[in-house]
Image 1 (tube, helix red, strand yellow):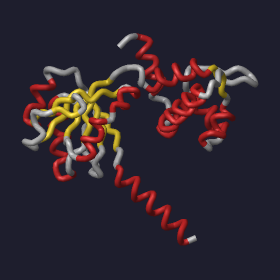
Image 2 (cartoon, helix red, strand yellow):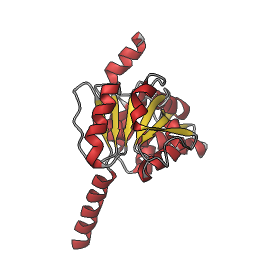
Image 3 (cartoon, helix red, strand yellow):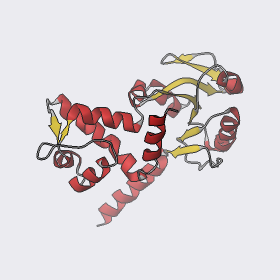
Length: 220
């Protein structure tokens, strides 16, 4: 890690998680504005597009190394470049996917992940109908080959889309094999050592929240 990268990493660790979750929204919105021909964008303009208070947007962007011009705003191309770099989207991070079911298969087909810095380079499963095949050009290996493939690929991220009954087992295998971060799509709360990064993205949990709010609104 270079000195500049170390400073950037140190600074990014100070950013509140809610801010980190909102910054990609700003990035996507600014890209849309660029497509419309805009050269500058203000916090107020972004606020109107995504319904987040302009003061909150300005506060979030204060964590990013960019400054706007009075009564003009941020230069669009610069803001896009700075946000992509700050969020890590400009560096390609390679990952293994575990569990090529319906969700795992959908992620393998999602070539758009590369635009956000994630490249799934191989997948693992135990289904004999899948092992030895490719999906969207990505090879699918037997789960038993994981440690051997770790020596062949430069990978430190594991994408977990296995059934919940084996989620912890596969997680333990990944970590033992050298995986440093787990993107967990299962509704199971995996247990990992403190030095392992985990991002839980349970579709079912989000469904539960949506259904609850929908029912609450209908009762009102």
